[in-house]
Length: 269
Ligand SMILES: [Zn+2]
Image (cartoon, rainbow, N blue to C red; front, side, top):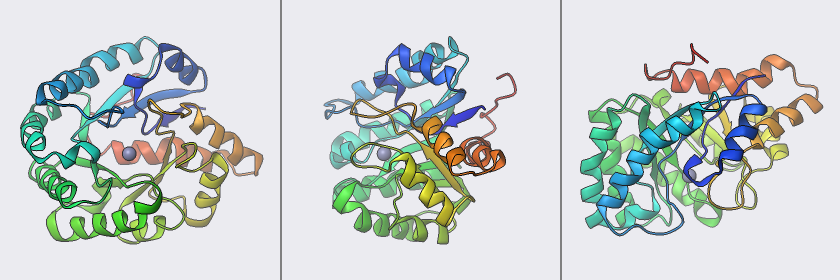
């Protein structure tokens, strides 16, 4: 069964990962513009990175029959550097015009600092001015609650964005409800150590889903599993969930959210 990998940093993955994802039914992947594991020092480094996301990965994925789409934005961690943020934000609109760029992301909070918050609000305003879809990261571990509350406050007070055009990612059992109650899409990350296991993911789908809910591996340069979505599909089937529900969570829902951008088009898949 075909599925969409809704958040995986393919720049950090090997070509073998594309092959394995294609074999398990992945037909499209969206990549969030993220922290590469170190803080970049110049805006030029982001120029190269956005070029990589919009050109290089698209071609690499196409060799395996996978549509590669990307988000463009300044990630929460590097948002702390306000001087750099000012320069990177100037680059963003040009890359958003690219035919595979679906919106602004991932943006948001990491350590929940004043600087991160200010950069976050600026990017929300940019998204609202340019009528873009938005992908928001929420902090891991002990900062998640505080970060999610402030994220929802920023969306309420600083941005004129329709709630169904915003996906708040990396929700957990204690943050999923306020996100869904506020009308936003919620993303579950199936990420070892700091995220959910496929089993916890299915528990949340059973308790809160399946509407406005998507799942992803959040695969990146760390210990992570780009096949986490098919593993969740297997767990759903093991528990006896119908194929329509498996398809809704792993294909129909992401296609509905991403399809709000006219650029997202799987007709030639
Ligand atoms: Zn993230």
